[in-house]
Image (tube, rainbow, N blue to C red; front, side, top):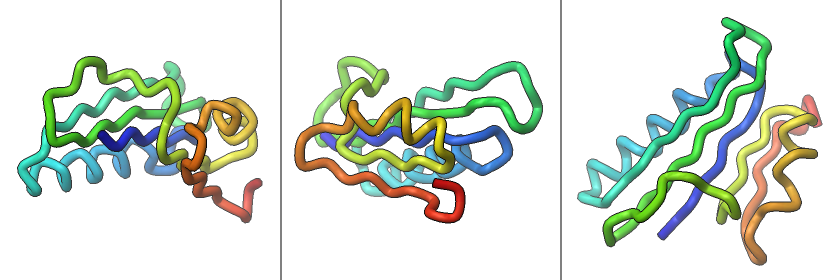
Length: 97
């Protein structure tokens, strides 16, 4: 199973990017889950989503130790970088981090 956590400010496309990843898994006949989490703000609040893509049924959509972290801002990087699984990948927006 591949577990991905995308995080950033609202309006950066974090939820949309996660949805695209989930749809890609569906196209490849994989089991997928997409779990968004965001605040009440329209723009600028925190936003993140968990995406799981697997050959087998997914037990829980919540990603606690992602294989891949996509961090679009410094608060998200600081919050989630220590949770990345050993040997995992962190992709960061270097213009903001």
